[in-house]
Length: 594
Image 1: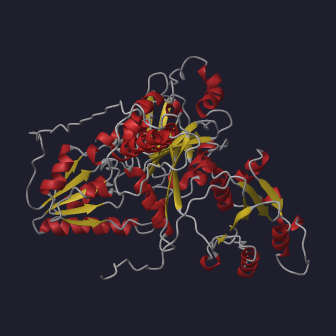
Image 2: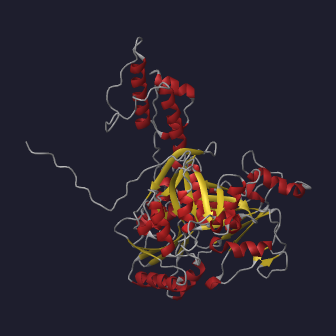
Image 3: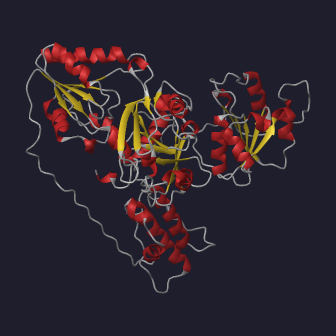
């Protein structure tokens, strides 16, 4: 009888584990933003955190100092640590580890070795730290020095319950094993965006149901029986069943529910629902019918060879394409010349027989790429093709459509401009912000944060009843905020200075699955955006009292007589206590239907 053939292991992967670090210590060396990020991750795993920093608290970043002041972690001055030998560089860490027997140190994270740090720790120093830890069997992660890493960090996301705003037990992590860290972050966003917003709440509810399913002292029963699917027969409820039989039956019900119920019913389960399920008395049936929308007789019919269509793709979500744009992309186009920020979900609608070219509008190459696309459109149209010049949002709202209309006209083509849903209006809406609202915002100004060839632009001054939407300005956030807050006459601002507590929202990748909304005030938004790490273009800024108008129970009395006296208290109620900002991930509830 021949032996079975099993897969051969292929090296290069990681053993991905998850650790609960209650009553164990994580030591972090360094005091910058990466150290703060590592500290937060360890704290969420219930670890004790000790930060070793040259200069102690005085040199630590703002977040670490705040956490130390609130007794979430300890910061020790590296130079004040006792040394076993003053002549040996980095003897402090060796002595610290040797004298910390009362602490159960699980991990050491060296964060001051980043390539971008001008005061980067030397490799010799990092090797000495690594050696001291390895001698005591303490795993080490050394930033930007892979060969001095015993473990690496995944690109991690922890899901929140959209109803309560609390973080749930569900986490995901993605690693490329050093092949593409930035790509890992993008893949993580794609995975997170593809899952329902309430998936974390569903996990927590299943956890509660598991607790109800088994007795406190039961350890042998599990919903995971090793089967690929939980389709084994579930025993019927026996009136005289033993506790062990009852536990087995209940855990099989948990497995069935986890495998087959939609996420939304799981997330919405009450304890009464759970008990009914575990008793075998709950029946749930659901059906959904996708309505078939008949073809519209108003579809755009402008098929004609040798034409150029300037088409707006909307903010990003495919369901926000106009019928005219959808027709142009799916039925009329021979060639699509697309801006780089048009999302894949829209480009995927284009038939595979249609050639698609993406503009190379990278920093420093915008003008050249623009000219290249216009020339390509004319060349193709001269060959009798129908060219769709695809732009994000609306073509004429900072989309340079006017330049292209004139260029194509000068070359013998009268282009057709197909409007799109502008992100200047849709972006705030997806963030729960009405750009105009009775009692809050009576007018709207849309402007850009950057002028032609990267030049600065003049921003409008503060007017309390007005909403300011700034497109293409997030990358220049510090300069924009400085112009708005500068109390002196500023040539970059036309009008009154903005109060420092003025609400602001940054909406990134509006209408897309990985949408992120940051709400804060002008004085805190810079720190808030920095704390989020990498930006997610495209992004827009919404500035003014409309930002908080629909939060919670709403605040639509901003413009009442004397209302400005309550503005600072209004902001405090909105953000809550000493919190300087709030972040919301993903699309609003309900958009999964589109």
